[in-house]
Length: 115
Image 1 (cartoon, one colour):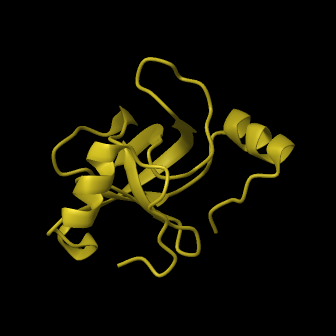
Image 2 (tube, rainbow, N blue to C red):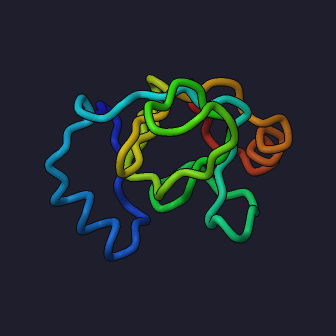
Image 3 (cartoon, rainbow, N blue to C red):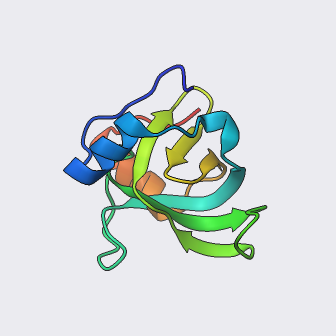
């Protein structure tokens, strides 16, 4: 489990799934994501803070079910800023380089960054 997990901000379905999940973080594949940013929706690609309920977008490498390339994840369930890990329903993402535009957006808002 994450040492500094965050689980607030989820919708009713995600919150229920987060509470009931039987798959531990150790059972999920860990995938590297580069040039990442956070958005609230697949349809509207506006930037959001890195928090549960939002979605990661970026270039993934090493996913067992998907080709390397651009992805928009399922909703974020928990975050470990210290280790730079983000957990979604099926995958744990190791945060690599952040998207430069997203980094500027975070800096303007004073948003905390992953280590």
